[in-house]
Length: 131
Image (tube, rainbow, N blue to C red; front, top):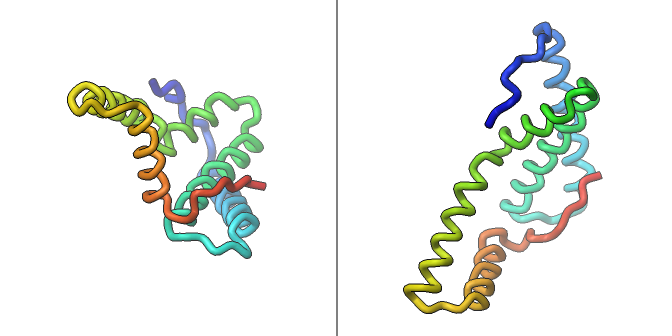
């Protein structure tokens, strides 16, 4: 599951420099994508997560271009990718139960899901392309 078991040997100063580069890239990316926009609290939270993942990915690839697979895996697990399988399983069971027990149609379930996504995401459910 977690193949990146080896730590990269970096001195403490190098580690601090990489963290600082990630921080600067994150803040710059957030500024570019959030300035001039009115965002809901939830949309701002999603934008922050996306900028953090993209900035960290960019900096780590600059620092270790030969370790792209490890960088991808690190970002995936750091952002909670390991839980998506559990969540999908729960959604499938819920969907199956609604169809079988409540005789709810697939279309009705899809519409309900879209309404839930819109409600949870608030007004900020828009695609933001990170530059």
